[in-house]
Image 1 (cartoon, rainbow, N blue to C red):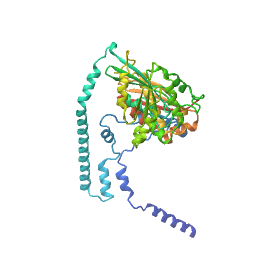
Image 2: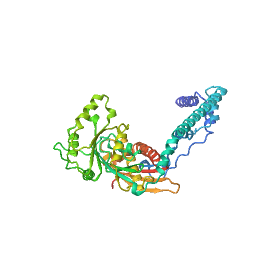
Image 3: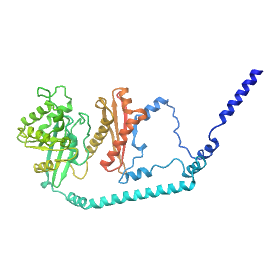
Image 4: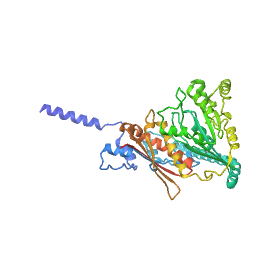
Length: 440
């Protein structure tokens, strides 16, 4: 009996200690339970592992609120609303933390006034920039609106070749004025020929960005090249002008004899009906002027090349002189592309290139090169927006897990950035869907 009494006293003491807390729980129950909570999705009949696999491996841009327009910063901040009402926050700060209600209200008023001033300044700056740019833009539009007769049209096809990571895609994007080809630090980013069109006045220039080419030490192409590289070699003679580009900064820091042999071979195999230009790229990375002059002196007198240009495909240095020369080489023939409307095929290629660029940025090692990237659906909706569905097919389940990321974080990040960039390029709403699956 004595043992039972001791146990009862211990239980009563423990229960009384549990009920003692630093704050009164009824205060939090009164203030916080009055707020509506977010509804959690009800569980389906699938198991937790199956549900995670199906949901995390698919990115749908309609599930994310991606703001667009000039007032991007303002819209993104104003669209985020607080979960709790401010009056309940004030009551908690007053009762629990002992803050003065008048100070809380005054600080909130100051924050709102500061936000209004910031928005007004942002709007004024945007209006001022548009007003300053308007005369030039209107003049350009008037020039573009003038229809060029077919007999007056001038055209030129330009192929851009070079070693991997020489800056071919960056130069193509800068000369066209928009992103048409993926740009990455990794080698072999471009996997097929990419078309970019630049139209100025009565002249249209079609740029063809090709995969990176490389020669063996013997001076001949690799026999184990893939079909896309072989097609790039075969298409060299099809262009009116061939630009051979190489990385001057890498030539100074880590010279590669294979790149020099490629340049020499392209010059020795020059065709009489094709002009070949040598572009020394990435001059913005060379700090000393004497190093730049050293590279120019080394390559300026190579046989087979009409001209030698020093350019920066990323910053645009020297591109104006190159564009002027190409305009002068145009021949009288009808345009191949509509200068006012971007063709659907070009838009499809751009959507694939943008997603591939983000894929190479976030996925490393050999995984992005083994992914089968397919465009499954392309549809223009009634409201003018685009619905794009692309599938990323991996060969192993482990590769799929790496591409999806934890709870779909990696494929979500790739999809959000690609969707935002496509909206900027196409200037319309884009509904991008990315699905990751294993090859069956």
